[in-house]
Length: 178
Picture 1 (cartoon, rainbow, N blue to C red):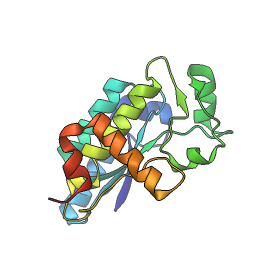
Picture 2: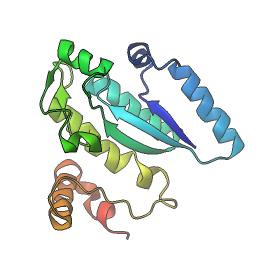
Picture 3: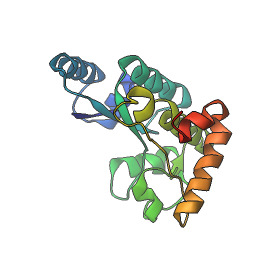
Picture 4: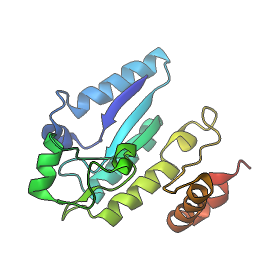
């Protein structure tokens, strides 16, 4: 069962106005866990008012809950409340209409509280350490994150570079099943 956790900071739910509270999400996870159903969380890095530190809390929450996770970068599409929020609190680094925006893997905006570099660092950390492979290696043993590039060889090379840059100690484990 997939759950849109989004973020593990209770204050974030006030700002994103999804209709539930963080406590509701935690309760839903407990109920699903009690049924024995496998759980997967969707998490978003860079929601309104989030910071590097608050996102670290989200990573720790996922680690504590031991659930499979997909991590995405917040993308402010035109006409959305997030787009308006970015116009008022941050600035766009790329057009939300670019094709990379639809992958939710590109930093489209930053704020004074949460820079592009911090967002990327946590996105890569989350996908390398708090994602399918770490939480459920038996369910998804060959996870490889392919980053930007025109062809498969470029994407694979970029993946090697990113993992080397952000997590050298896990380089072999990330790409090769030992």
